[in-house]
Image 1: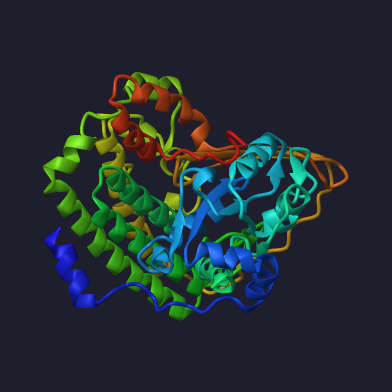
Image 2: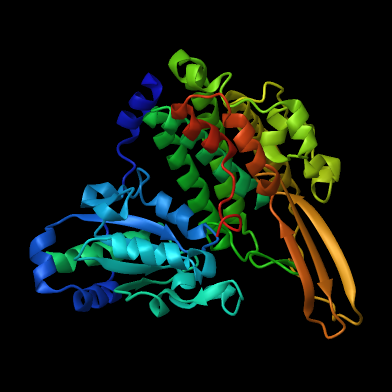
Length: 171
Length: 263
């Protein structure tokens, strides 16, 4: 264990310099967030992740934003285990019939003010699953979506920059 | 690409198991090593998870000489991480206290459910599509089928660590044999209705895909079976009689696919 600590001291920190917010996401998030919300939330967002039927590729990259390289918690972005504690619902995958009800219940269980982020091509337009009989449709058909993060899956840096944009307009 | 993917997932799982036993420093180290693999994959093949890079008729991205150098560098760093994590794991009785004899899957159940991957191989089932069916290029590679018999969380973790060692060996052999040439051939036109099946060893175990093509050249029937289909039922057997706090360890030691199973 000591070797890890010494190694970390020798190599310096693995965490990258804070990236700037994504410009497109910034504009979209600015439209979505009202002045009232900015005052209430401060510089912190609690995120509840919902897999509405994804292939789990997006989940792999969502996990990656918590690793020491991206270290998303340093920005005040935190994943929570219940929608009751959440400000943001981060939804992946096309919405499947099997997950539709769970998704709606989760949305209804999230206190106001709340925002919905569609993460990955599938949440945006169903991606490769479009037209499947198991799929209801893209997320925007089911819930009001405040921010879209395209990609298959979006790389961690894109996810971080989009979430930072959401934080930025709150300030 | 398959072996690089295996490396990235196996090291992630080892970290996740240790994380559930509150050894965060190993987890941090493993996620850093995973990130290293994904960054190299992105630089070499243009996608971190190498999705859509294996296509009908070949591969979508050619590996450059520079890419070969990057992967060689990665192999050296990965081997150092693997050795250090094994050394730390072996020197922490408090961690092994959580993994040894936890979540045991009997050899009998592994056989009965035809469980592949590290779940089967940690319970003495010597099955690996890369060995048992030895499809190319595995028929030309020197590697061992790694197996343990205790069937606990510790065995599943160590099988992964052993397989990481074998994957590193395989990658090193493959990089030495790369020859210039076509990376993709045209897909032949389908003249008549046809059918085919394939079994490949993914990181979780054997993935089976069966495809039937109609006379119009369209897919008539497709069946894909992930390794997790035969692993989920055994998780129930593994957690039986264990304390609640050990459930996350059992679960992470299986790391079955949720996608396609419960959604």
